[in-house]
Length: 142
Image (tube, rainbow, N blue to C red):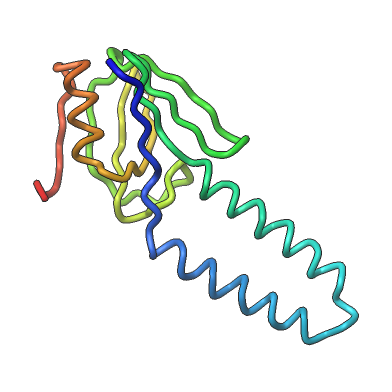
């Protein structure tokens, strides 16, 4: 099987509040000439968030699923240990850039992870081709 990479879907429900909050704080800080240190910290934070958005992705490499989220999260799991894939809107912290378009992957005996691949149906199909024992529960078939 050829290596396939899926970017994380970026949900507007996450992106819009981030833009509004950081945009407002940035504007208020720029209007006060004494807040240069706050502006520097805010710019560093914004760069960190942009980096996370650009480097959150999922790779299917033979029988391995590699989940990457910036330099903070890097996990490799054996696709043959995946038992279930279920759509979820669980807002728990995870390597996913969408809150409304997530899937929960159960693997091993008790482990699970929530991700948000763009082209979700194609991503799931690729996993099921490798491990046909995966039980998939989707809310809609769109």
